[in-house]
Length: 260
Image (cartoon, rainbow, N blue to C red; front, side, top):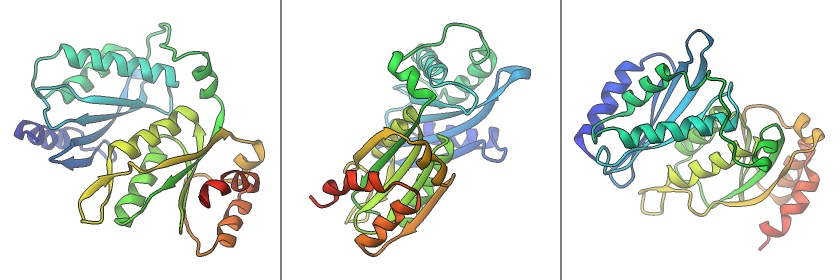
């Protein structure tokens, strides 16, 4: 991790000093830095955009990876903005560039231009307006406070409804737009969320997706918004947790995977 990258993060925290504007999500000598910046772009008709910059250990000699999300923009538009930010990053000199990229986006008008949005295929377009439900199986949670805070933060950022069922096995239930669920899973596998048996920070490489299907209207109504944590001690308590949110059929679907 370069001194230039660390110095840039310090400067960014001073520039984006409003509540919730800047957050250092990860700092690791092996994997680099992950920072999030929330900003309003688009002038008078501005919308809030959340930018996630993954700065690899070689940064700024190599450009950052970037994720874009926004409650006011479609998945296709966010994807288009991401591609243009990556193009802009590739064109810049090999020096700290995060602030330049944010400033470029604020001034470019990319968010409000009435141009044809970048599409990821007809199927993806349909998924944007459709509610999906996913069940994830986690391998372990050792650093509970850090892990749970990250899960809660990501559900908020990606506008998902989440429920963490803590027991054996450990399950995460997610509801929301399918692309956002995919981004949640991507974060799990690329950000160090926990520690291994030796106490070293680690990613959730063992996570498995047990189910991913369109949500029924009844389950959407019963699953409370936000992020909740529920502990259980037995199989009957786990089944009851699914019954409480009208997802008994989903429990029966994933049951064979839980008993393997």
